[in-house]
Image 1 (spheres, rainbow, N blue to C red):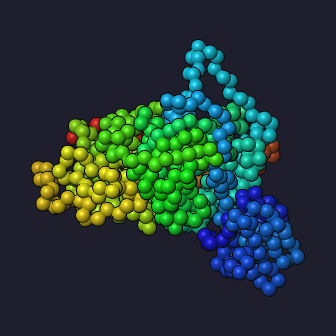
Image 2 (cartoon, one colour):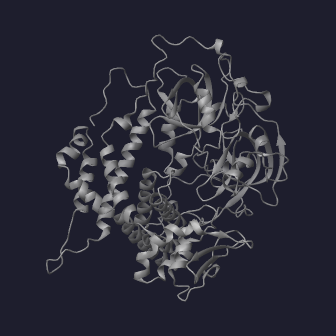
Image 3 (cartoon, one colour):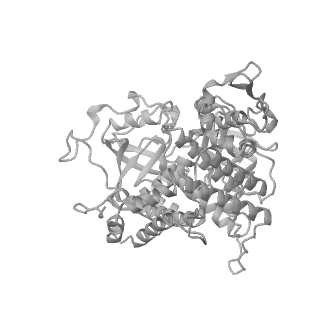
Length: 640
C-alpha cells in the first residue's frame, strides 16, 4: 500500500465491498494487491487507477485530503459502482481516522475559580502524562448511594452485538484468511458503532483492521504481539458492551469536552514528537503546575514525519502567547480564562489569555518531587491508582540513574538508590529520523554517567523505561554538561546530544571490581523466565493462523508436555484456560444428520479472550515485580 494515496473513510470502503457479488469478493484480495503500484496522481489532486482499457477508477478526495463520500470514488466500467475495480482501489488506500483532531471548543461547563481551580479543572496529564483526575467542586458524599451504571439504548446494544460477531469471525479467520471481505465486515460494524455512539469500540475495530492489513502486507513495522493486544481490546470492549453494560470508559467520547479552569500557572517539563501510523505528526509539550497538577499542549496535524520534526519549534497557539514549543518546554505560562479537558489538555478558546513566564529547573522547580520518589513506588502507584490501561501506559515518571552500558537493543542503567534493580532504557520512538535512538547510543558510551531521566514505563516489558528527556544530576561530577539555555534538560526527540555535552573521559569513575570489557550481562527478566510464553504463543498462533492453526497446534502436543511447565510453576489457571482454548478450537459439531458443521465463532472467541485477559494480568504482575529490588544472587528462574 502506498502512503501517498488519499485516506478513505472506513464506511466508504465497507459499502464498496458489501455491494460486490460473492464471485467478485473472492477476487478482491488479488485485485487489491497490485493496483496501488499503478496509481497516478493527476494535476487536479485526484488519483487514478487503470484496470485494462475500459476501466479507470478515480479517487477525488475532499478539502481535507480524505475520501469521505461514495461519490468521490468513480469507475468507468459498466458494473460501476458495484464493480471490483472501485472496491480494489479503495482497499489499496489507507484508512482514514474515525475522528481527526479538532480545535478546542469553548468551555461547556464552569467550575469555581480562584486558588487551586486549575488543579480542580484537570489535574491529569494529556495522553502522555497520566495521573489520577482531580475532582472539581465539593467531594461527593461517600455515604451516598452509588450511581447506577447506565444502560445501553437499543441501537448501541445492537451495534455492540454486531461488532462482537464481526470480531469473532475475524479472530477465527486469522491473518491468513482475514482478507478484504473480513476487514470490510469489521469496518461496517465499526461504522455502525460510531453512529450508535460507541467511539471506543469503533477505534478498537479500526486498530484491528490496520493490524490485519499490516500483517498481510508483511510490513516491517508489524508486530504480532500488537495485533494480539488489539484483538483482546476489541473483543473485551465489544463483549462487555454487548452484555448491556454502559461504562463510560468503554463507550468512550467522540469529542473532547473542555471546562473553564480559571487562572493557571504552569511550567514546562519537556516536549516530545508525535508520529502516528495514520499520517499525523506534531508535538506535545508537557507542563506542570506548582501544586503538581499536570497539563499538556499539543499540536498534531496531518503531515507525518516532516510535521513531527518541524513542530518542535512551532508557535504555541494559546491565548496569544509569543512562545514556541521549544521555549515553552523550558519556560512557563500564566494563563487567564484557561480551558482544560479531563485529560489535562489545555484548550485555545477565544477568552484565553497567556503570558510567558521564566522557566524552572528540574532540580528546584515544581518537577523536583517527580524525581524524589523511587521508580518502583511510582510504577506500583500507577498500576494501582488507575483502571485506564492507556493512562497507565503513557504516564511519566522520573528517576536518577547511573549508566551501566549497552546490552542488545537497549541501554542498561542502575537507579541511584540502594538495592534498586537494573532498568532498561528503550527509545520513546524508534523512527530512525528522530534522534531518540542516536541519543541513547551516545549515552551508552559513557558508563558510570549519572543521569536524571524523565520517561514513561513500558508496561509490556520487565523494568523498562522509555525516556523522553534527560538532564544532569546536581552535585555529581560525572554527569551531563548541558548549555545554560537548555535549563538543565535535553528533549531526546528534538535535541541532539554532542560530545561537548558529556564530561571528559578522564573524569569517569573507576569501574567496579570484576567489571571488564566483556559483553554486558543482562538484567533479570521474570517475564522472559516465566513459562507464560507458551500461552502467548498459542494466542498469537490463533491470531496469525486462525482457529484451525490453534486446533492443529493442540493436536501435535500432549497436554502434559504443553501445559505441565505452567502447572509446575503454579500457573494452574493459565494452563486450564489454554487447554480450554485448544479444546474449543478443535471442537467439530455435527448436525442432525451427523454431518460436520461449521462451529460458531462465539465460543472460540470467548475462550480466546479469557486466556488473553488472564495472560495480560499475569504478565502485568510480573512486570510490576521486576521494578522491585534486584534479584538476589543465586536465584534461579522458573521452569520454562
